[in-house]
Image 1: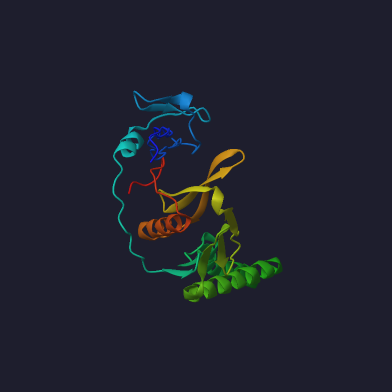
Image 2: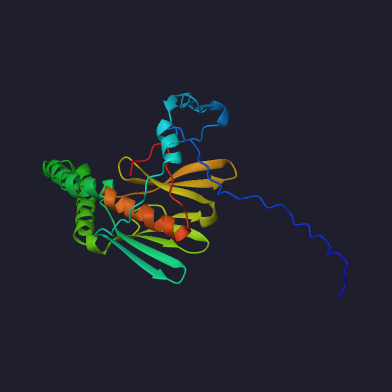
Length: 239
């Protein structure tokens, strides 16, 4: 056996890695991100350089160091979720749109009024009378068949898309899933997405729901499907 000393093996020093935890402070007035130079960490006061409002952000700092445990939200009535492999479909019963309400309740009143004017001898009121009558019939038809009307949200590996079925003059929305940073709820059951764009982060309204449980459940399922860790956003409804 050789008596030569063993060569010393030098190992690279390993440094412990800590999870990268960070948070953006958003202005509650205009929803823009506040720059670091406009934050007073010691006094927990910020000034927005976009709209020039001053606001406290001590709650965000407290939640940052003492995160609240999340709880599972049960699926409320009116929402169905379908999962196939890595794709998710969410079907939400449509709420009544403002145009539907106006058409169903004001349409008949205007139709009767215009027909009365037409019957008194004003022939120019015939077309407005017929138009109001048709709008009323169509709006009432939509209300009667509301159980078959859904908002469909599809989430796959590339996109999150939203579509009204039937459309009811509501625009379709599509987002790149890699650009979605956070999902949160604002007062009024508005669901917002924080989207990373070339111009910076934007707060985009996804849709409005009729109750907080529905909005909270939808936020939970979208974040879970996209692998997003929920965090506190300035201006959101407290959980």
